[in-house]
Structure formats: C-alpha cells, structure tokens
Amino acid sequence: MNTFGKIFQVTLYGESHQDAIGVVVDGMKPGTEIDIHRISEDLSKRRPGAVGTTARIEKDAFKITSGVFNNKATGSPVHIMIENKDVQSKDYEHLKFHPRPGHADFVAMKKYFGFHDYRGGGRFSGRLTAALVAAGALAKMMLPYTFHHELISLGTCKDPKAFDRYLEEIGNEGDSVGGMIRLTVNHVDIGLGEPMFYKLDAVITQLLMSIPAVKLVSFGDTLLLLTSKGSEFNDVLVNEDGKTKTNHSGGVTGGISNGNPIVIDVFVKPTSSIQKAQETYHFDQQSVDTLQAKGRHDVAIARRAGIVIENTVACVLADMYLLRNMYQ
Picture 1 (cartoon, rainbow, N blue to C red):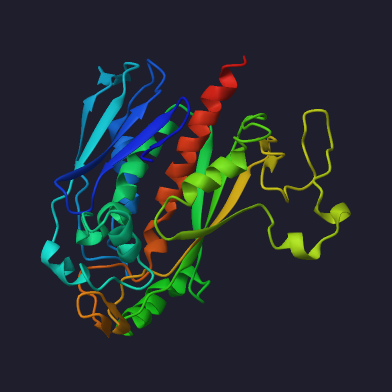
Picture 2 (picture 1 turned 60 degrees about the vertical axis):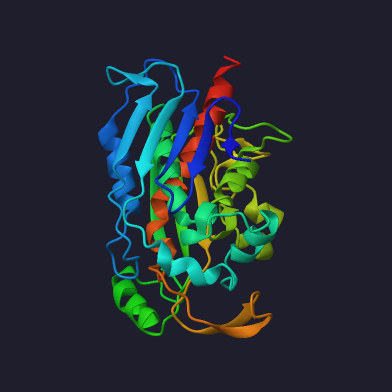
C-alpha cells in the first residue's frame, strides 16, 4: 500500500532514479499557513554533507502544484514534487542478478517478477524519505506540539564529538554501522489514539517501521521493563490533571497519549550497501560469487535519519489530532 492515514492521508510515489519522487497530502485544514521555508529547512536536515554520508547530493528542490493558494491550504490535496537530478544508474546494473545481502533487492525481484526498478534501490530506497520529510513538515504546520530529535549513538560510539573520526574508520574499512535516535514530542494533548486497532504507539511504530533501515522502535524506559517491578515502573499520578511523577511509559498509556512527552527510541540498522566485498548468490551464474557493490552510500544512514523520524511521527500525530477533534 502507498497511502497512510484516515483523515491526514499521505501518499508517496516515485523511485530512487526516476525523474521525480513526491507526496500527495490530503486532509490539510483549510486556511493553514503554508511556510515553504519550513519545508526547505526540514529537507536540508536530511541532506548529506557530514562525515559518513553519501556523495549523492540532491538539492531537493521541490514544487507545490496543488492545494496551496496565497500561502494557505485550500482544503484540496497538496502535491509536492521533488526532482531526482544526481543519479548514476549504471552503478546498479550488476545488482539485477546479484542482490545485495541485507537489502530488498532479492525480495523485490521475487515480489515484482523482475519488473521492479532496481536502480538505486528503486521503491525501497531511502531517497523516498525526502517525500516523507516534506509531508511531515506540512503536518507540523497544523500541530501545536514541539519536536526534538537527537542522535544518541552510532555503532559502538556514544560520544557525538567522536562520530566523525569513528565513521572515517568504518568507511576506510568499506563497512557501515547502525545507530539509535531519540525523538521527544512535547505539549501533546491527552487522548490521542484509540484503545484497540489504532493505538497511538502501534500506529507510530507501523509508520516508523516503514522507513528503510528502521528495525526497532521503543517507547519510554524500555530497558526498565526487564529489571523493574510494577511498583517501580508505574507512572504514579500526582494531580487531577494527570501529571505523573515519572514518564517510564514514554507518554502513551493503553495506546492513548497521557499528556507526558512522547519519548521514542528508534534503532537503524547498518547500511546494507557497503564497499567491502561479500560472497553471495548470483542468480544469472547460479552460484555464489563475490559482490563488490558500487554506487554512493552512507556509512551510517542513521546520521541523516533524525528529521525523517521526526516528520514521520508528525504525520501520525496530525492524523490522530484530526481524529481527536472529531469528538470535540
């Protein structure tokens, strides 16, 4: 499926090396102020440039073709198109029959009977997250919440001051590492989410797990789940407004926001495309052969993923926010 949401609906289209990628966002409240500079700022946070990020430099110039008039949302679907300019498709020809370990190359080949666009990872590429960032930027324009993301660790390195040196070493080995990102959302209303099949934490997890390379999502003090007693883990209420002494549950109780900050840890796996040679099956030769991946890839995709995670969660919260207001 290519569309998420019940009221705030996000539809992604495009592939890594097609002419463009983009998003159609339905459900923007008419009259919402649309600040294109905020979209540009969020897209710039995703772009490479730091040590350990890809040499593919897309300007992420975008065009809004519908849904906005006089800098206001009209109520019609908002269409944002982002062109792909810096592509080197020849780097991916060898992957047609020699899929990368850990990548979606193999399952895409089987699912789409070989008709998929394998260039740059096609539909499975992290390039599509630029469109998610644009959608989330729109979502945040409707929300009275504040967002903050932080890169906690890269591989075995937990010192942000040492990230550059650490990634240089990993890159020189022709390898990659994963990372952990923490997102905090403040000033969230009580009551977002539903008690059964549209739980806030479940839907957030669903959409976050749709981001390429995300493998684990947790809320609050997850490690305490294994070591704490209920009397220690429970968030004790201290007043009639629902204020609690702790926030071990990460702002969600019973699938519904409880007024505390929503705290989410997101774990991103090591980039599958690495320069180091790997022995893996070649479907054309029908034997295991050495794969030397080409192309331009991140040593640690987690370094650019913070804004993607932030804006993806914003899309969920916008949908939940609009659903919540239906009852008021």
